Length: 195
Image 1 (cartoon, rainbow, N blue to C red):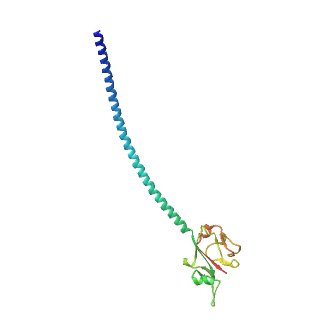
Image 2 (image 1 turned 30 degrees about the vertical axis):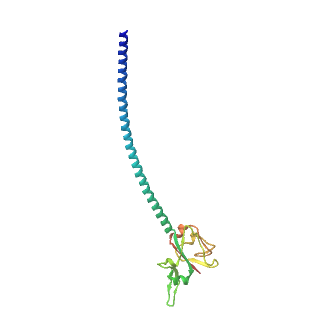
Image 3 (image 1 turned 120 degrees about the vertical axis):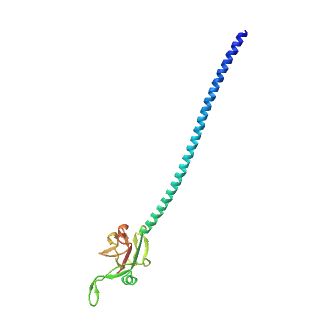
């Protein structure tokens, strides 16, 4: 009976020793896994820090590029405004000559007078004597008296405009600009003489 008890105790002791050895092995495995997980966490934290730095750098680059785009937009807007500026003046021949907007050129030189001289734009023009307009918005030039006859002295062509009545280079009524790009391509200064 005693032998049975001793055998049972030995068997139980061996089983407990085996369970203890298994528990120690499991503990070592878990510690190994724990070390791996800690190393992975450290690596992940480092990677997150690197990605955060990259994101911040990208955000700064995007911010700089947005500032450049805004600057370019402002420059383009300013350039468009400058390119769209035009100037016009309407007056009688004597007034245009007196203000220095137009000059007489050409014609035959007779002893008494120079016959056939025509009014042409002066070589230098004073913007202050003209009415400024934005060609993107103004598509019609109103004349002071629509019953009178007018003629364009500057380089613009009546072919790029609509008028009430036209006789060669002369016209009556307001000047409606059909194609602003073609009309203003030759000169940004429109000089109209009243006849």
